[in-house]
Amino acid sequence: RARDAGGNCYRFFSPAMNQRAHDRVILSSVLGTALSSERLRLVYQPQVSPHTGAIHGVEALARWHDPVRGNISPVRFIPLAEEAGLIEALGEWALRQACGQMAQWMADGIAIPSVAVNLSARHFRDPGLPAMIAAILQETGIPPGRLMVEMTESTMIADMDSTTEAARAIRALGVGLSMDDFGTGFSTLANLVNLPLNEVKIDRSFVDGMDRVEESRQIVNAVIGMGRNLGMSIVAEGVETKEQLALLDELGCPVVQGFLISHPLEAQLLPDWVRTWQQSCSTGLTRLPAA
Ligand code: C2E
Ligand code: MG
Ligand code: MG
Ligand code: MG
Image (cartoon, rainbow, N blue to C red; front, side, top):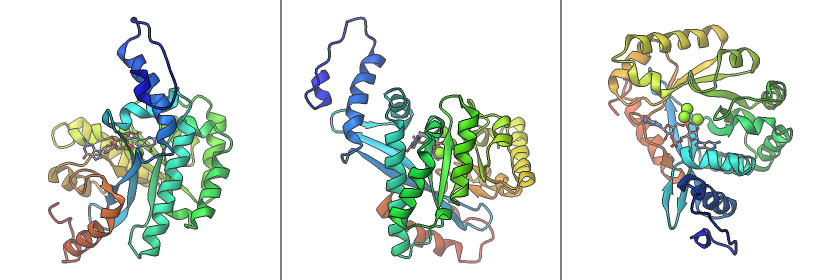
């Protein structure tokens, strides 16, 4: 079975090895080659104003298609990439792909103001990160303001000093910095003080309960107010219903993202999506057209 992973790498598994460990070995060895093959790609999910429908940008999300195993979720392969020491390679690949795609959209006159790329918090400990981002901006020729970097915390920020330094250097390039999944996991209020953030993304677990649970609604309201006071934009993630959308608009949330607006799309579908979206928004509505 290990040979299915491709290449000429032979490994032996003790019967005691559990399925997860087994998967990890296979997935990590495949991921090493997936980065340079067609197996890995990015899809893009639109982000819009809940009030006017104006397009704020898109978020790039990694997709891995394995010819034998089918689609593997990033929720599974990102932690594996971290364990296998491949997270920096994955981050660089995603930045290069997304910035190259933005350059293409700009050349084609597609009105997508920015692209957000997810980077593992672990990657911010790499002292070469800001220079690598600068090099990719230069290679692709996109203005730095067109790129947003989302810090995704699957592990605790272990070294706050070097993380803060990297974050400042990235901001100094003119690139935006966003805290992903705010309110869950390891993302803390302390990070809001320490990191030079432009944007905070409210995790979808809070958005999910908004129309039923008063507490969720209060938390969302508080985060929106905090963003306003700190001069940060707020993105509500995982918006699935019109009720959620209406509530977020009422609370003054500047940006929403979720299946109600659009599922993540293949890059080549974005131009049509933008055209259709703008058409339905330009009919004089102050609120989003029914998606
Ligand atoms: P995330 O950055 O918080 O991305 C949002 C996730 O929510 C995406 O899942 C997206 O497809 C999903 N989503 C969007 N709208 C809705 C909705 O209305 N309802 C529901 N139920 N889900 C929605 P996805 O693509 O499976 O990605 C999962 C996570 O994997 C991401 O969460 C991010 O943390 C990580 N990830 C994805 N791509 C990359 C990448 O290139 N690099 C790194 N380091 N992490 C990535
Ligand atoms: Mg994200
Ligand atoms: Mg998120
Ligand atoms: Mg998430």
